[in-house]
Length: 447
Length: 142
Image (cartoon, rainbow over all chains, first blue to last red; front, side):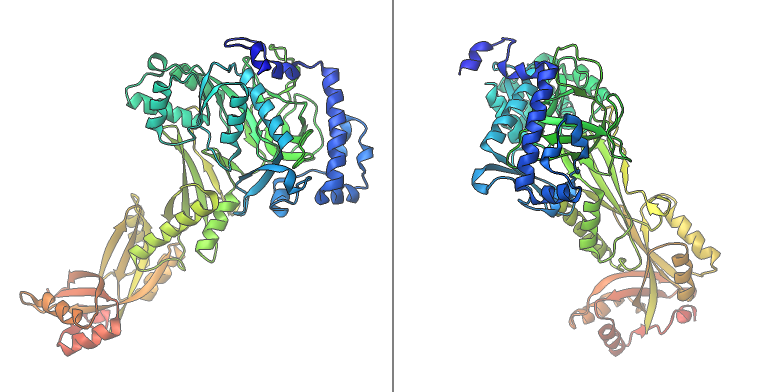
């Protein structure tokens, strides 16, 4: 309870955030020390990493400086799939206290594990995230991230309890109830996906509730999907809620890899736990700070599942100027796009290949298809247009409707998401260079 | 006795039906009759034509999803309850109608195109009832 004496009610000093302000030279020392330790641990315990190091003729002792990290082999999402479920764990299961999973590329999820210390680290980085966004222990926080295997809900939850806020673990969905709780419970801060919150703003309007007049919500931490400054402007103007970006991915720890501070000018990476590199998307060579490229992350303190040089596929750049807030942890620009074809809908990662598998499970041969993403009333919608072939066609309207339903069910089984399936005439889906354009993202990111 | 029917998948969007009809016209296909069944965003166009092979080749070449099936064509007894008595008789033999559509030929006779769940059985029972089952599309106008 002692830390709370430091920030009783509206206090502004949070001991947990002290690490955000570590002198840079000290921060780099900590990083190097932890980098060496995590590489040694991985080399000893994780077969896949050891084999890749051996293939390159590298030993843990070859890492002398932080820059030496660029010699090490990369890890990619399929490595998690190929070693499903526990192949990348570096500790016995008796040390693992929590598992989470996210959708993988082939229907099998990707599994991540945490030791008790990992859970503590996760809690700490979320606390630092929340403090950076101005949350305090006097806040009543509605956590609208999904609870369960998804890292969002329980990840934020741990940090919210850590700062001593009052958590309402409401999870997603049931929009009218969300507004009712917000009003009746006197909610002052929220966490969730930005698109869902925009949907809630519109729900409140329909219910005759004015966010600014009738509700007390002042701050929100939003993430788990890409969003833009236009969306932020809309959220802040329409609801009066100051909106902060949070970055993370299950493979690394979940939410809490990086977070915005009050300056809302890029996301501070919690560099004492995560080593960030930016590499050229084609050559995979490191690029200088300020240059855009793919974000590559090494976990510096993870025990259960240390991840070395994980290619996030997120495109960003490291900010070169120091932040006005005084934090020394470097910032990345907000994620604008990805280097692969993954898309995020309602906080769920989806690859077009998952849709392909779903369609193949329904019909023996893969039809031409297109995924069309739209946003209605702030909510993401996925439509999958499937071109009908002569072989698929039956002279029976209800058989065709059944086929449509089977496609939808198969997509839902693999992605966990509802999709509207539309049957299309052959040749109506545009093809680029002979290959159909698989993804049409028409979500207007401005609202 | 069985008549070939060509079914074409169409999206329920403006211009799709007219484009298909244009394809058939350009191929010189003469339609005897047709029916469009729609289900929300899509529909099935079923056509009966003496030029079934030509029609199928033309629409397939134009890129449509096409399937052929068999139906039967009968001349409906020209009296009140004529169709009812035929269908009632078939019901007793568990022969049921998947779908049907009607048209009048040039001589004014009403012709029903019917897809039964069991075509062979239907033909046999209809013939027992003395119903005129057309042998081919060419006879519609005779």
